[in-house]
Amino acid sequence: MRLKLSAHAAPLLWASLLALTSVSTSTAQAQTPSAARSPLGWQTCQALKADPTAQLACFQQWADAQTPANMPAPSLTTAPANPATGQPATPVLLLPSLNTEAPDGKPIGCKNTKYSELSRFWELQRGTDCDTFSLRGYRPITLAVSTSDSVNMQPSSPSVGHTALTAQPYMRTENKIQLSVRTKIAKGLLKSGPEDDDDHDSLWFGYTQQSYWQLFNGAISRPFRTTDHEPEVLYIYPHQIPLAGGWTYRLSGLGLVHQSNGQSLPLSRSWNRVYLMGAAEKTLGPDSGLTLQGRVWDRLKESSGDDDNPGIENYIGRAEVTGSWQVNKANTLGVTLRHSLRKEARGSARLDWMMAPASSPNYTGLRYHVQLFSGYGDSLVDYNRKRTVLSVGLSLVDW
Image (tube, rainbow, N blue to C red; front, side, top):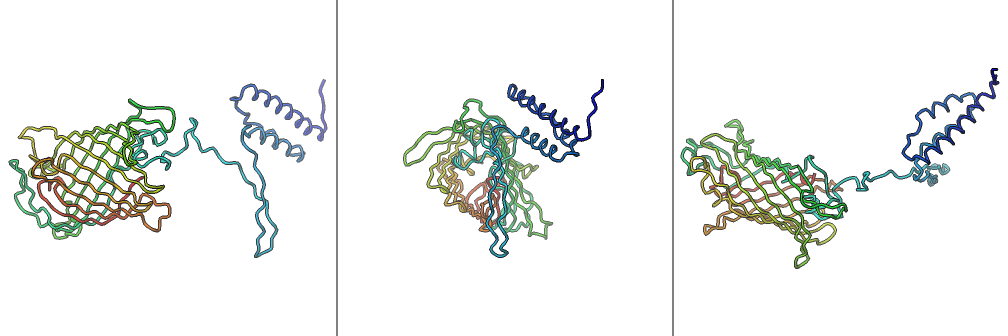
């Protein structure tokens, strides 16, 4: 026996079947919240073209089924009338806000400004964690014009065969280029926790490259006068230890660093060292603060036949202290002092002023950068030569 339906009855039957299906689906979803919704619902509604009213009801039921139970419904508001044209107000649909949290409840984005400068830079807490194996800035990435009181035209070293045979007509004005990046290769090795304010230790790899380029010296084909390479491995252990005067001791570190200029004899220069570091900070205001960081290192010994630069630590130094003052959101002042910790009292002093462009309302990582250096070790080839260098240019930080 066959059941025949009229042309008008068929759409109504489809709608009835759809309603029963929706009720069945809703019941199943209530029993099993993780069940997937059917991808064919809209196709069922599309088949009801002959009855627009039934099709509209079908699509409404399908749309309701796609909306999560805990999502607020969209609301209508009225835009103000246009005073110039006198046009009536227009209803505006306001959609519910999207989820801005990761599945574990942590806000998306790791540079949360509620945390301190050191915590964000070294990712000392879970709330500042940017995860592993992604590139961060380390020292400023810099392009500058430098001028100095002297330039080393014939570098020398006490080691046999390490003194240039001829002098080069270098200019005292040249370009300075610095590239510096780092990546976190491990975290939570000895210290971790589930809350955003919990401290996490970390292991880092960093690389810095600094070059002096004789861009303005066309007479000798504009060579790179020197390029230094500095890879390092660094372990950071976080603290939150209150100190006098509103300071907080924030981290201790242990590092191993190699530095060389990649040259062959007679200009080859290189050394290896291990260092300890510590850092503290003090908050002065919403956009102002002080940081203080110290490092002390010991050179790893080399045989006299392999030593390109004997006594380099007596010139560049054995320790350094770096202080930074975040004056406001746009300006930062810094000073770095190095000392040999010997009676000769050699070392260096460096002053830095960074200023964000006024045209950048959000103060991106681009900075105008003025730097004044005086002392030994501005480059490896100049490790035993004292000079004063003024650099003016652009730097990229906090990226």
